[in-house]
Image 1 (cartoon, rainbow, N blue to C red):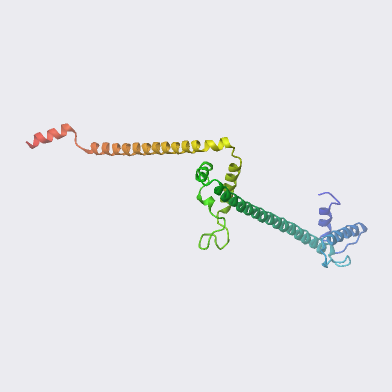
Image 2 (image 1 turned 135 degrees about the horizontal axis):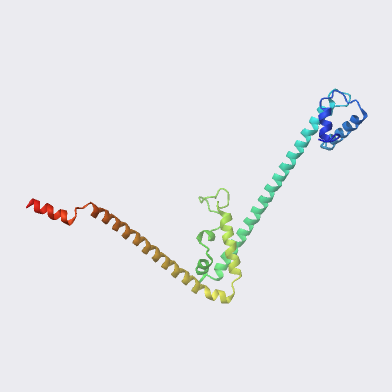
Length: 229
């Protein structure tokens, strides 16, 4: 701690009953000036005059309280700004969601014969094709928005972008792509069924082996039969 630093001055004057030297009066004037800079419009702070005992201690404590208040105010202002920004972003996404939903419905009307195939190609499922605003009795109706609407909005926006970027050549390839996906899904399902069947056969073999291990051997069976005869 350097002599003359604010920390050093405060440590020295905190226990001083009176401000007695010219140098300390300068420090005191600076302290009062800092307090005044923290004063808000219409606010009258209770600043201890230099003639009062322990005036430095009282005023320094007041300055610390004012600095804490300013920090808390800035923190709250930053939090309020962040909340406002988040709310604005959610409102923008909601507007975009409704716009994309309207576009999809119009796109469906223009391409009714192949719309379901296009949806399968792009991975768009029935929930994304539901109205963003739930009907009475549906989940989220009291809020006017479906509970998981941001996820639906994201998938809907991705689908709209893909549909808008389709060239005639790409569009002509979609039936083949969807058919190949279906075939691969069937083959994968068959592979899964076969793997499950192998597991069942293996389990049965293990059980049969365990049962056979508890049965008497052929030699023991013959000896038992001979003894009985």
